[in-house]
Image 1: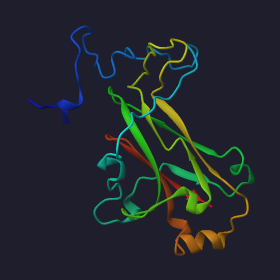
Image 2 (image 1 turned 45 degrees about the horizontal axis):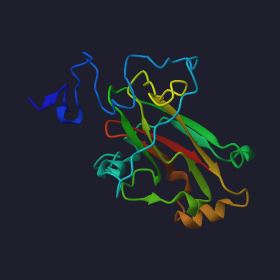
Image 3 (image 1 turned 180 degrees about the horizontal axis):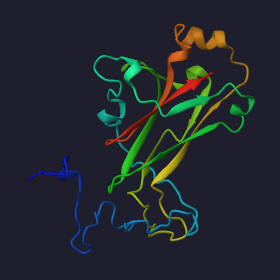
Length: 200
């Protein structure tokens, strides 16, 4: 069968050298449950970058709000409060975590809640997202064969911050056509997604 556990098996490339372990990116890392350590004691964990490509995959902007676009049915992780002054300097962070046994690239967007085509450039709102994309290691993390002291992490903090404190509510309203309360941060992997409301 081409399907395994409800997922298309072509996504995985199994390596016979290690039973039960995928060999995606095998030459760069070895993947075991919590091999890289979950407490950070085994080194400074890093985020793997996404390989160069001509365009983002289609799933990076897929609809996560449902066919009806009814925002009341959308699962919201929480609210990011950018109204505080320190949002200009240090920003506000949210955590994403990969529970899959495969590498999972992620992409971050700012959108209008419930509107599947309303992706907004952060710079239009005087905002900065860091990182805007990355590649989460399989569940438990992965060793870095190039530098054992810097294992790849299966989770990462995404920070959103203001580039200036001069933006006023009227500026946001003008940019968003009066829908400032519908602003949200969306993080997508191929297998999952997370949504946070943004309070300006």
